Length: 305
Image (cartoon, rainbow, N blue to C red; front, side, top):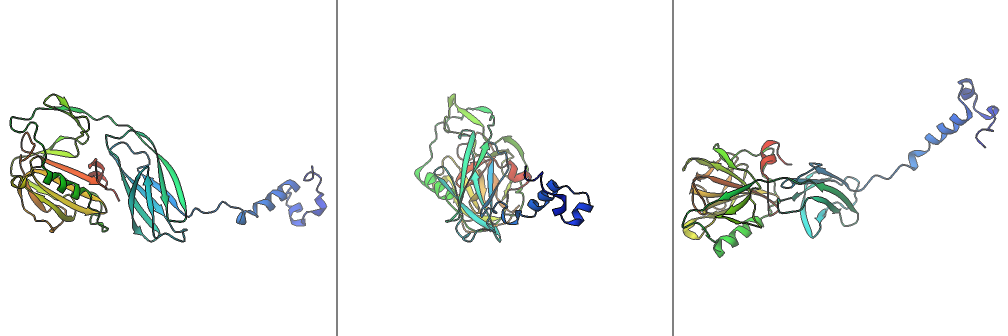
């Protein structure tokens, strides 16, 4: 071979004296070349948190755009759904992808684009077993249907997308009462399985009249009362925490805020009651991300940024 036949006399004297073979000298020469041959730095770097989500989790899509010349219009898409991306630092954006118990586990392909460059990155969403519960509603509450007013107001609440982020760090529990029903429970109501239903939040079984507080800073965007036609939600408060994250407090006895108020974490917004479709005094707290109900647990334990 050509390398084997290279004469030691042609090597620099310092290499010969150091005992470096001809083959090794060629190797060292090749190592000095990669500056122009290294793989190009990606214009869009995409990370997921958590890296191994399960159904019900909120997936943070973190996009680093430091090497992108046109990073002003980041779009994050999964299938037919596009999720807003918000700048969290110079050259860094974040979008939230909600997952729910009604979805199928498996591979998702997340598409990220800045208008010029597009990246496709896959993530696997793991399965999760949700318990089944049987609920018997008392006479007068069985078969209660939501009014057109509360359905419309609930849709408007889920559609809120304020560009500001009001929360910072983990949320706090909205009640000190014990948890009675976890997120994601599937239910039979009076013996009939609710096919497209899952428990969209956490229930806290507290004494009637005990305080309910905001789990994070936010603006009150929904106040509804039984007297106005909120038959299922009961007396209800909706809080916009910003960037597609929102809390809903249902079945309240009393409400102590008005629409448009800004509340801090821990500020009282009402009291526990049993209004609407409720079997007894409790708070139902639902956490919505981009219009879908997600598991609040991780938001309480470690926070989602």
